[in-house]
Length: 173
Image (cartoon, rainbow, N blue to C red; front, side, top):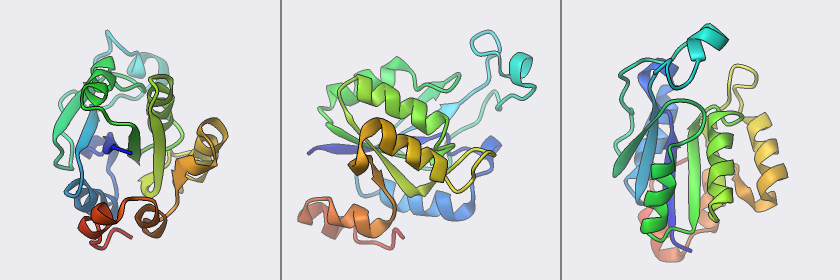
């Protein structure tokens, strides 16, 4: 199954842990990877007006990827789905910031577009409600099936073809 890595909002304004940036960066080097970056535009999404908070207006991703998509809210932009379809990906591995909100929103969008979304829990943090990402992982399993969450690098290694496993054998855990 042809797969890509989707990195959600790993950017300075969300202050991701250094270990997360490092481990995702290692994985991104081993496969086709894309990222979203959240940028504030109150005319598009009322973060400040409704939530009293806003992301930065000009953040950049902290992980180097093949392509970056700007978003203004929880969902990835439709162009991301179009791009993944044009590249004939089937499975999209998702990691990043807020397993229970932005990552989950991406999962729904991917699922509705016909992809197999898979959360890489060990490379994902949750919202302030649950930084461990356990709530997000439970929601992923409930909505996308038991095989939609990989909890650690060993599970990831065991589900990819052997040639890819050799390439991704760096310390991802």
